[in-house]
Length: 300
Image (cartoon, rainbow, N blue to C red; front, side):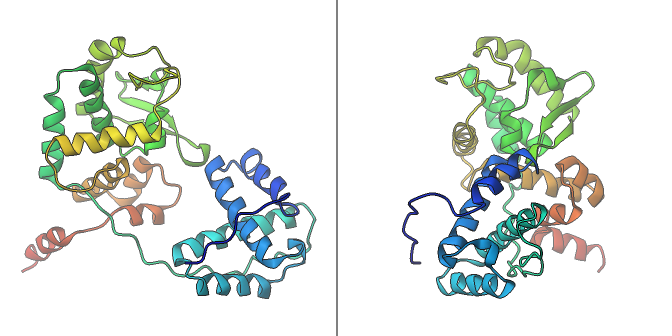
């Protein structure tokens, strides 16, 4: 796929203000704002003029050019989201009268494969972690158990604060996607693991307002980095001898699937995952071949 040359010079008109407004006004995460700015800048560089002059036909022509360039449908879908947000911003600010991106259709994207841990793999990983005796191992156990029993996103777990965790009430509060606060409900099994961790292990880790503190962090007051958290999850799986891919979000997929297998309704799972829309919950859950065979066996 041909790569665009790196951009030089000032940003295109209105783009910097748009990116700032996404974070400061609309409450988007800095990462999403940076991605949208990148997508809009790509269009502006292709367009070569003030983006306020663009029409719907121009936007469609750009998307067609990106498709010919080999840009994947999922990326082009994200570009459409960025362009919609940008031109909605220009309309709200009075820069343009009519929004050319309002009717812009995004390409269809096949649903992603949902990779989960099987029950035997879950048991093997947690069993291995429960047998570790060093401080780092105890914390790794608490980290993976928290992912397994709450379905938290990695970004939420790394920012989980001690002051927002109430083990007696079996609840916690985290800042989720796009800065939304949500309540966690902790199963009894996890509350016991975290109680032991906080009483016996946490005092031996760097002082921090966060539940999990990296023992070797340069800035111990800072939260775990995503890279370090990812490494903990990978090491947990590999050391347990589970020969599959490992990443924090795989535990979220597993959590959602296990809840549905246990009979929880989709809207309850939606609330537990912190999704605003139930369609997002559907994408995170699935029935694998074993589930389908089991369901069929109950019929015939």
